[in-house]
Length: 243
Image (cartoon, rainbow, N blue to C red; front, top):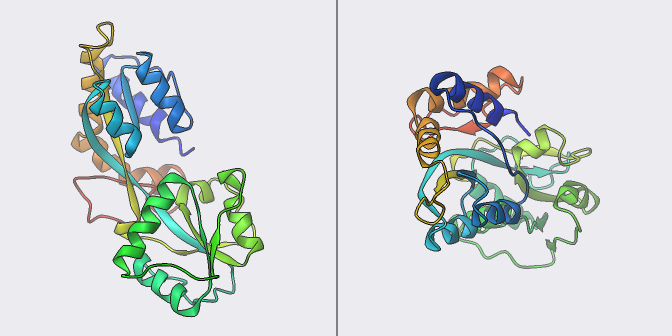
């Protein structure tokens, strides 16, 4: 979506002489299946139950976080809860709850996990007719579902920025909260289970992702190469640099 991976792969190839081939992309189950079949040497994706199970089942080893992306609160332009410009997601949810403005409980895995964490940080249990059930058939329709119900919702920033989700009639209200970031992990195929896996190449690429040059590049990437004016990914070793 963002173009980050091709750029990282290009830099890795130029530095090491390895060649990177993408063999699977898409929803989590597709990535899980590819790793369990031994079709890939390395996996990077959002952390969660699937990655934990891949490690616990001995499919993958050396699971490490290497970057984060940002989720945001999107809402109707008239902003009934008056949260526009806030940078604290939990505080924004408190205002939504206090005003009983409508809020969609989006069932996208990452959004759901992060939203529940923000409610916990806000010390609130969301309940009432202002909490709307997600009735979309496709997660990509969630912003238009929220728009039609004059409601707020938490989604990834990149799908709104790059048009993966139709954001017409909706606006990003709350952003730049470190608590609203989700980690990506990197992990390698277990060579004991998959003897043909390129363990050395996978470890080299995994280490490369965590190297200082790549970690510093992550902050440059969104602002400099995609014209967004702000970061799309957040490194681990310079976490305070969020502009």
